[in-house]
Image 1 (cartoon, rainbow, N blue to C red):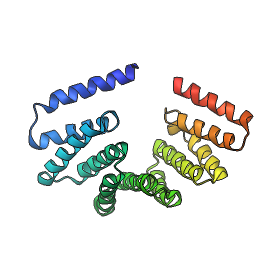
Image 2 (spheres, rainbow, N blue to C red):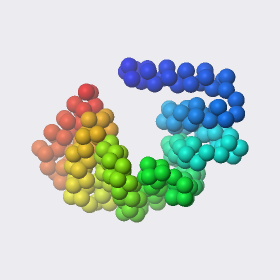
Image 3 (tube, rainbow, N blue to C red):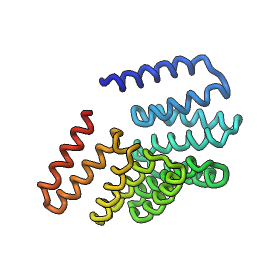
Length: 219
């Protein structure tokens, strides 16, 4: 395990220990953090924690917390391959964000709709419409990291749709975002660029990007 992974694991154990001593409304923030963590590590446990959170939020209403837990819960359902259940949550979030959310929450809801369309329907061009909506919000907020992630997501949608030149253009834009290009997630973008060149049979062009992806992952 890396030091970062050990630190996160230690933090989660600390949160679980705290949760055991909390009741009612106090449990909600800790439950949200645990649901986010277990969405990748143990989706079934994330769903259990997330549903408890939703039940508490019926009594202790808080729109921002509901948007967050729906987002993390949808992610857990996606990871279990239950796209229909995830879709119900992201549609609920889109409506709530548009009515009462801030700009960042609206952007997150739009991206969740895009991921749902991609996973459930495979309609990549429709997904791009929602990614573009999120991109507009992130640019208004000047969130360099989120701009980069979303540009890379749009590039991936074009790649899946067979529009390889457009994919390259968006990947390049993503890597121009300093807040994104220095993060581990940029590894995927370097690898995706290499995949485009592999598709064209331009192996000599692909190799440098695979090497960049490897170096980025190890840095």
